[in-house]
Image (cartoon, rainbow, N blue to C red; front, top):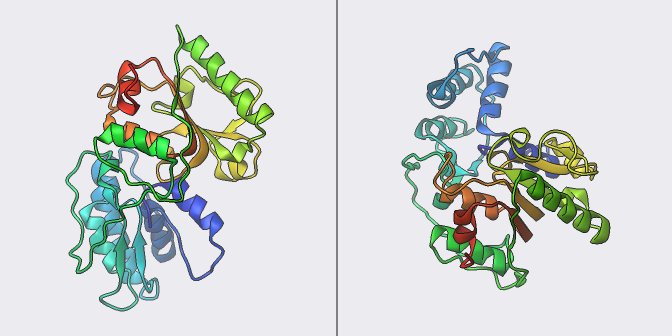
Length: 292
């Protein structure tokens, strides 16, 4: 169980095992409610209380009607995004009580400004090695959060973060198109290895709608995985996922427009091999490097 719907769909598509169910939390609630009551009604004025408190009760009600809707073990990813009530009801999802509950989380990725509370645990492990990023990208990430990030010995050194600036949005868009042409046409990088992330919805940025240059873009996982288009979405929509070549585009100044250091950290840490930043925001550059 994770928080991000795209991550759940991505993982489910990679795991071909009928004994393993992968859902984002609200998807699990919907599935249980549809099975138990044949409906999952979302109020037209649904607010934060509905999506945090009421959905947990809805899942509990569905479980009461479905004694066989249970699991041998529950694994939670993105635990920093879960609410206390969610953990309580997830513990009731076990086939036998008490059952194993594994929670993976990163406090630095807490984007929703809440106190983190987790179930009591007899065993805690601190995963000390970054196995996703190159050393240079990990250095940029640790610069953002002000903490040391230890990188796995097998991680390559990699290239420094690339920064692009322009006088206006049209100039930045041209820079993005040129960089895409380089990676796709010259470097022959598959479209499924490239992602473009923004803080606001892409259509509200200088990217606009439709293609980026001659390159098709998508926020559909199946289309992206099939190498038919470059992924373009918000940072939050891509949370938990990763791309070999990552473009961060049109980022605002840090600590403005609900964009903090945690958001910048989450965004930058999605990049596995190369990170390219297209932004005129001085604090973004300062947040990722010593360059000014």
